[in-house]
Image (spheres, rainbow, N blue to C red):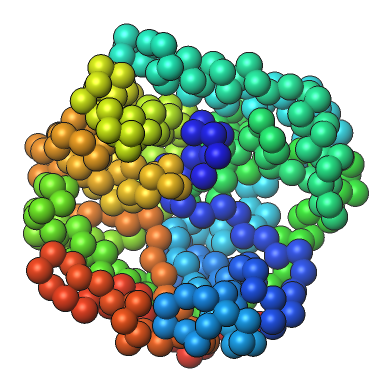
Length: 389
């Protein structure tokens, strides 16, 4: 996401979208181009667009000068699509950066400690978070800022992260200090650097009519069908899967209050995932990691637990592990119980996507077998009004 506890995508798997410059049409790097405010702001729809001329399904190939645009829709608070929303900066104060980073991870460690002995063993969640805390130094922050090219404001660097929770389309802090909690925090070398940072967030922003659910209906339908596959052991009902939708602002706010717990949970889940992938899913260490993750969630509000049970966002490579009763990828119900999953009324998704430009949704690479159904489109074409930049 990479060290397990340094990058977290607990609810929404996108970082803040920022475009410092527009590259040429032939560049094969993925370039963040724009943020789109959709008119349906009551639901907090926000879309990030990237351009890519690399090889991918449904396109003619890499470097042909015909870019493919990918639009990713997430939920954010009303009028919060703008990149400068909730952004704060620590100006030329390395020690303050270190204090904030350590405080955020300490808050997560406190959640792990409160969850009981399964979180406290050797190489388990609490010790892993303590290692992260101990590794944060002023020298590392100084070196990161000094090494940055064309940007003297950073949210993270080698061995430190001011905003470790990727959440609601932004990366946010879990430092309990109210000046930083729930905000995207940057370390800036000067006031001038901060001014340039905030100005850069205003680039390439526009407003469109529409909504994520409508514009990205193909991906939504694919995700709903995927959530309904019985063999996957998610244990959501067919009705809950069919009613699957993008997470809403109220749910994001509720989950955000549990930000430190989400980081602790992700740490435990990552430890378990590493053991499962290595064939050690039945070992005492893996069993303890899953029990720790379960206990961390159990200490949060009933509303937060319900959101965790409903969320389908399982991408271990991105350190996201929510998959109903299949969370943990070993024994059904180890972390989120079958009863919790079966009680879900609507499955929740953290993001939706569509593509356009050099893209053909009918290409074989854009179709997947879901359960027993073949050739299910996994992504569709965005509306024609989406910009080509």
